[in-house]
Image (cartoon, rainbow, N blue to C red; front, side, top):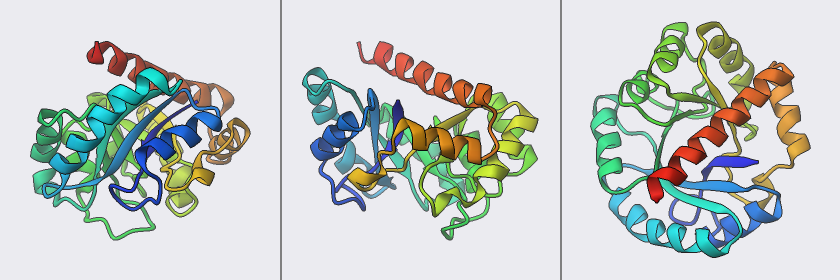
Length: 219
């Protein structure tokens, strides 16, 4: 299993990065991306601290560890440039906090994330058909989440992504050790969102391919 959306004490989790990595491994994950909430004020702080740790711990923790950010509540007009800035600061993965039904994300955030070339658009809420088609064109991965509050629109995301040919990933948006769900729970959430078994496997494959790309880039 792979989780590309994990939070630590550098944002709103109680877990230190090392704690998050440890519990992910104990839950059976083979790769995680630490993606704390970020904007223009704290990206350099997060990445400056977490990148060296991820590189070092990945060698010894028995799990691949990557450092990125989840851009959160950045004004849509600034998102593309903020994605570029995050990459310039060394972010191995850029996630954007999408227009979840559980939050007050500004309209246009999903489109800006896709336009800016984010790696993953997290919990995109009532994703439009046009944005899903654009995500397919741009290679932006759309998230099915196991986090209950953000998962209210999982079914809509699955249907809209399928119609557009957009690729999905399955993430936990982990904030606590209990959020690293089992393989069985992960499968249940995916099937509950309306994914066929083959579509779930395609989502898992998309995550494996992204991790393989990150590993190559880190060499």
